[in-house]
Structures are given as structure tokens and as C-alpha cells.
Length: 147
Image 1 (cartoon, rainbow, N blue to C red):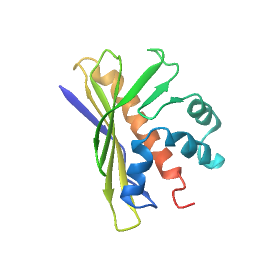
Image 2: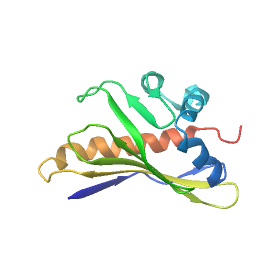
Image 3: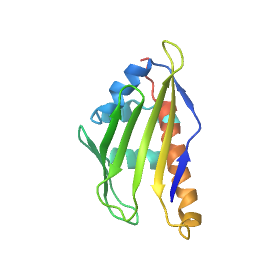
């Protein structure tokens, strides 16, 4: 049975097409990560971000209980959805960035995870998956698009 974990909506100070263009080519993430204000991201989280391996269509996250995990772009719906799926995890999961225009120069963004989690595992993974979506939304809110 599929479960969904969504972040709060965050407002980005950029047109929806600009936000989509930035995130649909994952190589743009490196510059965005480097431009995050130091006071908005804790040092331990910044260190994790700097260890990411990024290509145009994939991100590899190091560490964790499953070892390195590579997320690849699975689906693009311009300009409203970017969906990533892991290469190999024991559960079916997608990480999504959902975008919606909020006027000509603002975008509402929501991070979401959809996962097929067995009923008995849900209590164990619910908190960490919700935390991932919330942290992703916080990172999005810290990106200075207008500069």
C-alpha cells in the first residue's frame, strides 16, 4: 500500500519555469548548494550536501544504512513535476518536487515521497521519511533564486 509524505509548501522567489529548469537538470544543484547561505544550513547538513555525486540525471547520496543510494530522474512534467527513483532499494519509492506558479515571479514548491511500505514497517519509517521531505523543503526555501 502506497504512503505519501509531503513537506509544507514553500514559496520560492522565481517564476515556475525558472525553478523547473534549475531542478530538471540535476547538475544545476551543485551551484545551488554552493550558493546556500552558510547561516541557513547547519554545518553537518552542508557537509552531507558537499558529498553528493551529481550528474545531469542522477544524484548519489553516500552513507546511511543502505550504503550509497543513487536517485535518477524518472519522470518530468514541465513545469510542474520532477520525480526521482532510486536504482536499488528494497521498497518502491519516488522523491518528487511539485511546483505550482504563484503569480508571475513566485513558485509554490512541495517536496513529497511516495513509497510502498509494508504495514508493519510504516511506524519505523514514517518519521525519517517525513523528516527528509521537511529538510528538502527547508533547503529549497534557503536557495537565493533572485540573485
